[in-house]
Length: 371
Image 1 (spheres, helix red, strand yellow):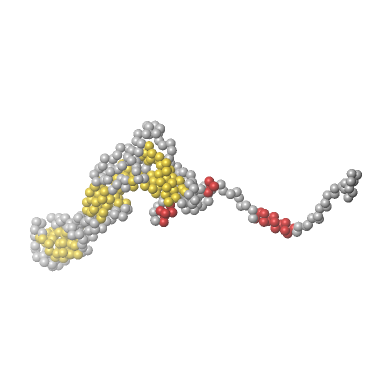
Image 2: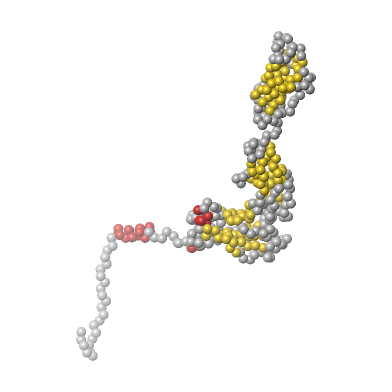
């Protein structure tokens, strides 16, 4: 390079690019396949789509005089994917006093905001064998209206959307008064008609056994309810409740009253039917048919020379259908009847007697029948 004032600068020459390398066709195909197969499967879900769906089928009821809120657990998140078990639930509540709802259904004093009534730890309740989708209201007041909504909490405690609301106007039902009467393998409950609260539709008298299982139900129009399929001579405990329907259509039960009874068979069986005497040379034979559904335990043959002087002359097993009187004297008219008894010792009524006179004829003939 020349120096000085009159020196001429060398012209700039761009560098020559290096020769390009050839990429094998197989590598290009592999890269293209990897880009298609290993790319993103789709757009990631928004956080709100991973939240639980709102609980469904919100129900309000009265159980043993307590207001109960229940619902169905969500099974999917808002994006439609299968949901892991929720961590818990949050129950929201609003209240307004009696008389707040007008005749046209407007409710100017209804709550504008809902407050959290309780938060439920579903995992803890489930581990203890308790249902996390039920909650009992601890302070329901008669005449007040309650509105509830429930939301599920995700595994990180993030709340999902609220369920649809449900309202109930709480009514207190009294514990019923009733008596129990012993019957054969059953009991008859007779309720004292209560003063049903105003605004509540009377629905039923209900009876439960000692294990809380329903055993019988009767309509309010009749205050008698029969509990069947009980064992005789075994004491049972029965609890009665009143059930009604609120103006919003919810079924509630009041507190229960408990009574005890021992079923006993006090109903006598029917006597045998079609009692017919057959007269022979050496005896008078009686034949009959059983009557009714209850099997006989014993049968008793009564005989006398008059209808007013019948005395027992034989005791037979309950399945017997024939009795032969070998002690009847020839030429004497006798009156006969047969009485039955059941396993409890109840004896049937004494049916009308039939009569016959022993004959010395060789061939038996039918008796003279009823006088």
